[in-house]
Length: 332
Length: 274
Ligand code: SF4
Image (tube, rainbow over all chains, first blue to last red; front, top):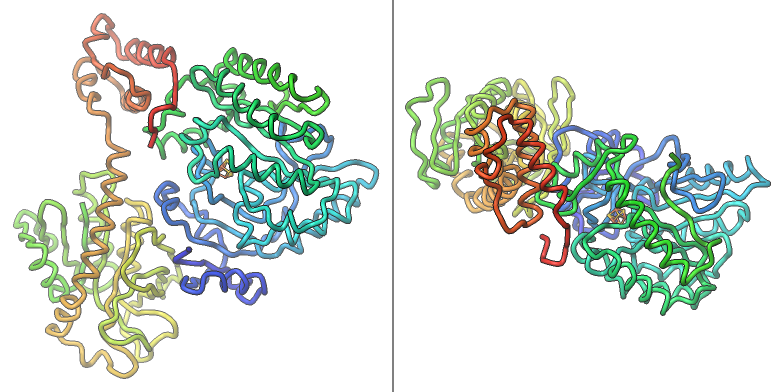
């Protein structure tokens, strides 16, 4: 329940603004000219705000579709992301959003039609190529579904664009719309995992590994193609056993033919974001281990990265063909 | 620590009594009152006075995080006299500058926009409380503290039906007094947040012992604190002890040795980590 909903004056009468506000009848509406006045200003504390985030409803004026960062793709040549929402309901301690944004408030851009048009335009610019669009870069794709109605609004766009693939990246159990929708081939529902013990320690508010697997099984039975994302892989002493168990747990429940892709990447965070995260959570064990700096990113030591990647890759190859595997590490 | 700025003595009186604040004779620029947890300054009327008093209080605040509260009276066209309202948006009428205090605390009352004007106005502005200090208070306090810890709480003293001409010192005191439970609840919540933050920001206890033994530059002091925090975060069995590094002659060598020691430590998350 949000206590405050900040609303850009320009979208005050937007039907989606009204629908979202109707879900929070007791929230106080506060009007602003531009969401950045609330979201981007200095002197905010992400950690304090995370205790009780407000909702911000805004209009996204440009850059509805952006090039995805290196290492984000799953085999496609053209990778894009789009963010109808900034920030996340969950609170993963490794999440770079807490280092990137000054505010933990949730922003929803209500002009979905502009995102959809930009997706259609981008797909039409490259009619003979397979394009990938990622929706879970600045938020979890599904976690706020009851409020955003995101899948209901965006799936029809992609179902009519055969050369535009959509990846919904999530840790959420909000799959009702997906289960009520006829699956189509160019949409992948990709679930992110860390081993259960790490998830409990670091992924605050996230459904358990077991619950996520149950959601995946339902989606697979309904006919959706699934992705598995082990990105970031998190180190702890004895990580081999943790990841071995996680893979066993997953592949004993998910038939190999339902898996579209599996990707793997070690923890890496832009240096400035990492420092912000350490300042917010100086007592956090995740940040207390050894880290090195590689090309502006804070990463585990190279040898540890390689050890984790090789181990997990070898393990995964026992379950999936090589063709389904993608490394998330950006090129040197 | 909670820092409180009121414009008038009659607004401060119920708070001074309730919190048993003692006058601080050492402070002469403003009338100041305090106990171990709270400091109160009476700024006088107007945003400039409020900003100056806020800065004055901030300059002697030794905590990294403190709560800031500006309780007082305000007008509103429609709200009933005596209604307490937190400000969720502050507007400085003269400059049109706006601020949005983040309301993270479970506030015990509703909230409203608050506009600070320079001179009394004949008409109420629609949809906003009116006062003469809050923008000065907020602009100054937000230089020292993150917005979640800074709030203006106003008690409605006049409206379309009962104008400013009926405000007296006595009924101002009564309005504040009648809302002490609301003020108290907000102060409690701010104190909890400030304590949380101070615990997080506190320098590790061993920092002083290391700094007594070697000379660390300001930059190195930050590095030292960061490393000692890592040490604690790892839950290592032995606490950091400068005596274990006593063979090292320079601060640089000490920092390097601590870092190498920490880099060698295993990380495991199995114990409760929150
Ligand atoms: S689920 Fe993803 S977006 Fe949400 S907090 Fe965790 S890492 Fe961040």
